[in-house]
Image (spheres, rainbow, N blue to C red):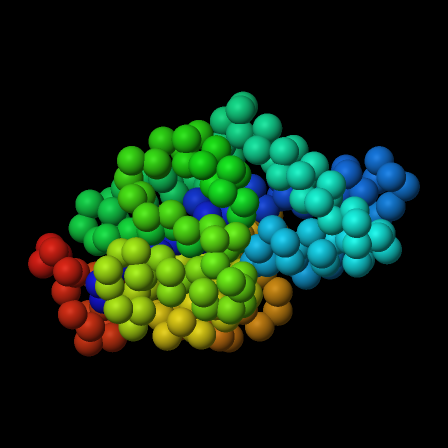
Length: 227
């Protein structure tokens, strides 16, 4: 195993609920209803895709998509001004892993939201490679964002371990030929079937030990030779 690539929302920060709440509030202000099922439908989608899905599910016009995107992104970004909803032990786990393995973020979130989250968690200097699904051709469940993260890290896709909380994210990692780890988020649980397709399932990010998984799989040591 050569590198570890993390999803952001639901893995490091418990922000999936923020996205849900802001979509609910935005829809309600217009007399519309956004549900948990709707939220599951957009998990893993890049900005253009989730704005389109949101517009379709709310029965709005195609011309409304830019306003939907801007409003929800602005509302979520603003919440980080008050601090990040860090998942217990996640920041420490990322720093521990980054001390041994090359690491990256591969997130479906808008780049502005990712930057706000990294600033609020203090992880910007720890994670040198950050890729938003908005920067590639296709969002999750397509493999593009993970393949781009591996390319920027300078490692082979087959040598990467990815950490996800959603079924679409797992599908993206599997399509990229990477080893997948599911850490379910109790706030917004993954869709049914996620555990069945993951290579590994952990209750908490703090339990992640890439070296142990590499040994179990008979994989190589980290690129820097550390153990």
